Image 1 (cartoon, rainbow, N blue to C red):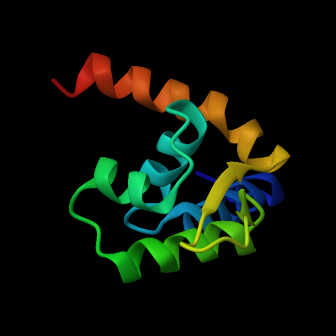
Image 2: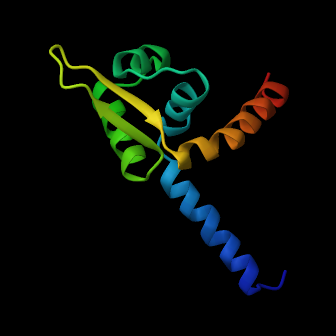
Image 3: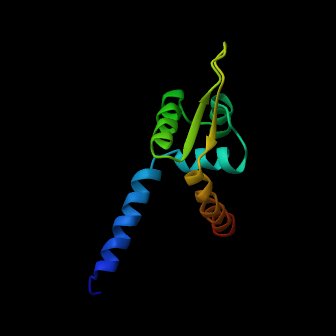
Length: 108
């Protein structure tokens, strides 16, 4: 296949998406926040199961830094923090729904 400027650009796009969403838990975190309405740290950890507190914290910070989620600290004792999707995160939900449908169909 002859390399063209367009094929090189597509590769860079996929590479960038992979770098942003390639964390072990990021897709699952986005699924629970965006499609299951799970907003709190503890609830996310319970839903995901095998994730450590430090891994969840790291993945949430990266998703926030990449513009997929917002973190809202209620400044209460005990601490109350909730996560919501940004517009960028919301725009990814249709892609995530298709991935889930494909998995439901082909990964039995």
